[in-house]
Length: 500
Image (cartoon, rainbow, N blue to C red; front, side, top):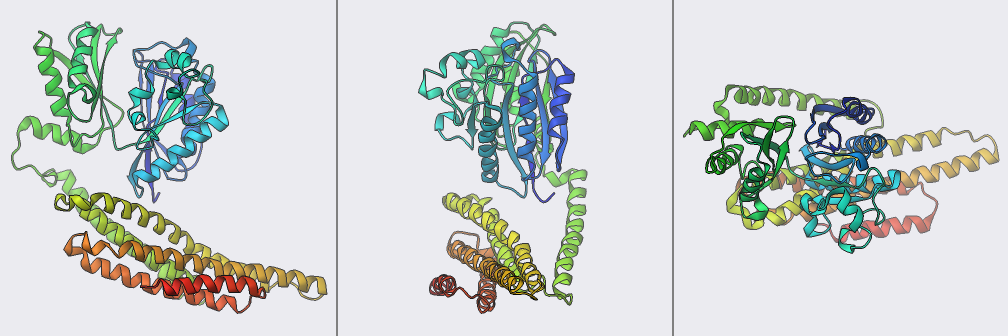
């Protein structure tokens, strides 16, 4: 897969393995979706499923799971230690590879809208997808849980969902959907059944009540083990690490004469987070991630594999262009050149965003990088679209023309195919012009070492725009509708006037 998005849906079922398995199988029923992990907790009566999938597949996978959960889970009969408001309680999307947080926001919005349209489950958007500032935090949306929200949603406009009517699904409740960074679900168990102490500790360490940054926490009772637990979500482990959280909870508990029995990770955790915890406790002064042999080995092997893979990918396209056939031709090559220009701009923005000395430019750079990513994706699609438009023209050329009716049908098909063959490179030229406009201010707000990369990007963009325009001209000659041609020529003039 060229794009990888993680989805971590939480379902309000942690005791019936058959129901959980049925939900998982529903999510895995489509292409390009893979199960990484599943966790069930009887005390919480909740399961956490970790999936990865492509940008195109992950949203539908989540919707399949939501639909199955609505069939199997009845919240009117549900009891558990963990707060919940829906059979599918929360569905976050996390960018992993080849996608941005903004891409995940778009997926979250579509899933939320479709959940209402297909299943009549009202939905709320949270974290990066939130449409109201107060809804960035999940706890604000879930206040009162299923029962409280059911009573309030119809009378309090502030509790109305982002999608759907002001009434919960009778058994499936409501669902919260969003996009966020990687989150670590981390719990610490105390050597006491006093849940009040766990709640006090949670209040002292969580961000919302003046505690540690990027920490959400609550105290819960583990009846099956006769223990109290501080249950946490760490929303940015690079800001507040697991080691810091563990120390804080242990310190607060020790002040009350209570020890820590152990801790647990729910779902998956980045290797970096555990490395940071080890460094924290060992007090390693000269630590670098490359100090770990597996990390360094992965870097070396990835570099070699990437080099071989990139060459193979490039060789395949170059060979297809060189082959004695009309496609892929100049229009496809122009679209690729434009996509590469945008990609270079993305790279320069990404590298500069890692530099604190350029912090004043970070908001503008984030905006540029997101815009370039969108343009790159469309230009990549135009590589194939350009070839397909020419192939459609060739199909029209081969239509029979023995009779007048056949001649008329062939002429109509040729006119339609010629228009499309002109429209695709024109769109490419206009998209590349946007790439150029986005690249233009970058030299003044990016690292000096990337000047040559931006120069290459601008040169590629200029070539792409010029090449695409030539492909438009060559197709206009065969189009009979002069009014339509004049409209295209007007767009070409605007492109020329705005040229760099």
